[in-house]
Image (tube, rainbow, N blue to C red; front, side, top):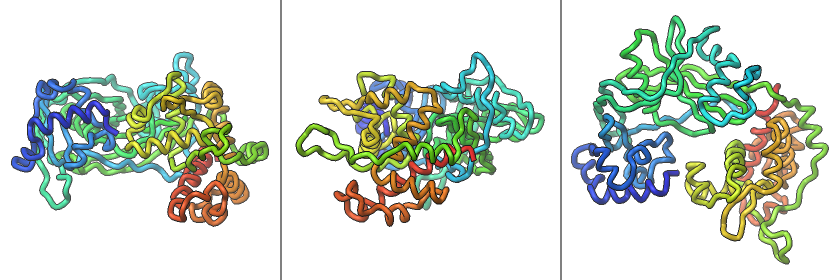
Length: 438
């Protein structure tokens, strides 16, 4: 979700400059950086890498913003985001060796540049580029040069817009070059749903002026020792929305990989936990809601952040961190409580629990086992995990519903809600399945 200060600042600018009316009258609205700076720094106000980061007032009017130069932006009904596609959950990623370099710790990847270095030195980029020795090119912040492009209207029945860019500032995470092609990389150190195409398109047009080789935009998503890589092309270089995927790769660093026997051993030492409650000492303790947070990787990312923040995080902080709407952020905080990894103090701050802190300070391969054990122990999950181990497959949401919808942990919910919660059970078991080495 958008930064709350950005929300307020853009509300002021939209009202002060009548931006929706100006867009309706002229098709777009140009705004200078010094105008934005009257309410907040432009560098904080105009960079939205994902759709959920857009302030609500932009989303309400189906608007987005793009840089025209270092001092000016354009706001309009632009379709700026592209939904990312990931390889099927059930497809086992290719195993990569951990780089044996003293100065590159593959077990503690905390940023995009470190993730890119690990992927390169483990041989993953060799597969992506189709070359045994792709050259890494020094990049970073630079000027874009001058170019024009067409961008689709946010409404499909409306014609596209023409946008002219004059030396806007861009930032490139990585470029790899072979004798045949150039690979332009945008990396993220967390799971995301979509990407602002600007992050690929502006650098793409900039590099076009420097090489006659084909340029392939690449997204690299790293989370929990796994790289999800997608290689694209712009089928029409002059159209912002012509991004087409060519192929995908999935890699996992070969640290301490798990097999079915390991899962069976974990399950054998696990017992189904009691239905979790907020206050175990209260006469009538209130239940923690049954999880509705399908992406277990996001729970891990939240734990990684909380362990670095002893004072905890308020709900708004978690909303900003996850870039979700408030209700969805609550779901993930509650899921962490359900697992016993997160607690909530009297002031409403979410904190890492003693159990969560102990787990998150262990080496990754032990964290991995602890996460799996915690999932298996959760009510309903315990039953579904037994089915998974018997069939060596992840059960469908419908299968989980059939075997568990009468469980006492679900007694407070109607049928529709139970079926939705079963998707979370399936999602967490899919995460367990993805940890297998094959």
